[in-house]
Amino acid sequence: MKLLKQIFILLSIGLFIGSCASSPIKDTIKTEKPVIIANDSLEYQIIIIDIGFNAFLNSIAKPEGFYSQSYLEARNRTWVLTWNNRVRNISQFDSSIYENIIDFQSGTNYGYDVNYKLFNYFLFAQQKYRMNLGGGFRANRIN
Image (tube, rainbow, N blue to C red):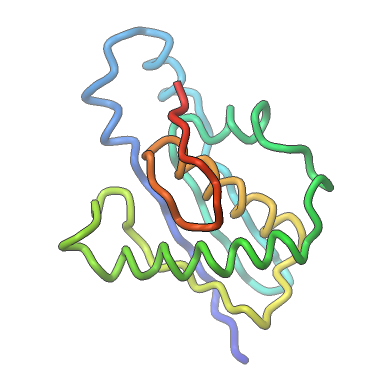
């Protein structure tokens, strides 16, 4: 299987820039850095620019090692399929959330870090956007 460098930008800053009224949120927008998920040996990269994901990853997400890599891979396979179906179905789903296809091959070992961060982005997105990608996780709103 030939792998090409993949760059996906999940961008939803525009949704919040116009709706931010308080200065702490505006300061967060100015200072929050994108989360880069990469496996250099596979030339695989995902860049996530979504306000609040850094905070989620650093404070709310379970620590690295909490889940096994096989568990993360299984969840990610399911959620990637659902995500990609929604990207392709723009008439039914918000294209400002589901912007890019994620090329996640089930037979490829992306490593723990890629799977961990992708898994946590899906958890974050389900809570932030009140969506359900399947798998029994409740979409509680992040405040």
